[in-house]
Length: 312
Ligand code: TUI
Image (cartoon, rainbow, N blue to C red; front, side):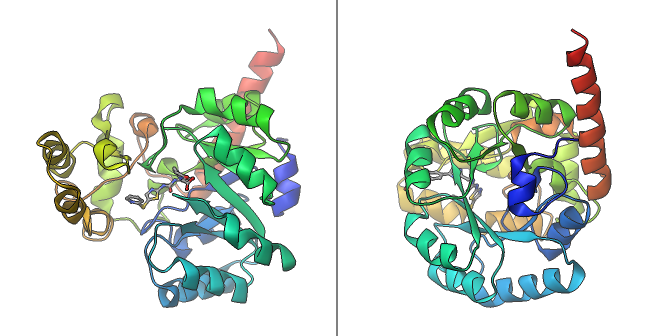
């Protein structure tokens, strides 16, 4: 059940992709999600190629299932990372925070599936034109770097505007969100925040607990004034960031303030002075589970929703 065309394209059992979260989405998480029947994805973030090479090796040694890598296009190492993914023939690439158009042709030659994450109809159309295999359409409910439009408004508009498969992201963490995404015309979902709060995720326990403790209005967006809005949990770091923005601090000062803040939260567990990137659905997440449990629960709940709807 719920086998959609993206399952065949990617060679996976369930149409559930794991978000390629910088620092958080290491080989451990990717392996757990892929082994549970979804698509595990290594988040390359700003890491240099040598670090990612080791992550790819680790994934290849721990699973025979398909996996992917997410390329953050603002990374200073983006060209080296793309060369590495080509060399290692990583079967699936998602991209974020930019336009991956110029890289797509080369990957097509070796059969790599390229799936850009897009926040607008215009970029979705452009990506289809340059040969993207599918799209992750990410609403502003998502954690991390975000666009303006909600998942609810954006997904059906892009479904109508393109002919390639659409995967919905942003604000999805359970079977209800999964079914809502399919109702909007998506053929799958990408889930980030829910997978942070798993046993296999290497994020510091303080990071996971900050998400578990968060209620609906504890998740806010910083960086609107800098052109790089980021959704994260409201803590001392987020409040100080907003204060700098409100005071009209110059871009350099603001950017400097943010450097190293995600690592501080994920690796050091500094949930007050680090950047705890997380989506608006954090308030729905109340416990740490295994990736297998997360995926099975989504599918079982989705089946129940489906039965409920079919009786109406
Ligand atoms: O990329 C993400 N989420 C991220 S990246 C990240 S690391 C970072 N930290 C601080 C500032 C910037 C990045 C943390 N979370 N999600 C996918 C996503 N892509 N969301 C929005 C976009 C996006 C935005 C503009 C994609 C393309 C785009 O187009 C620009 C263009 O060139 O047309």
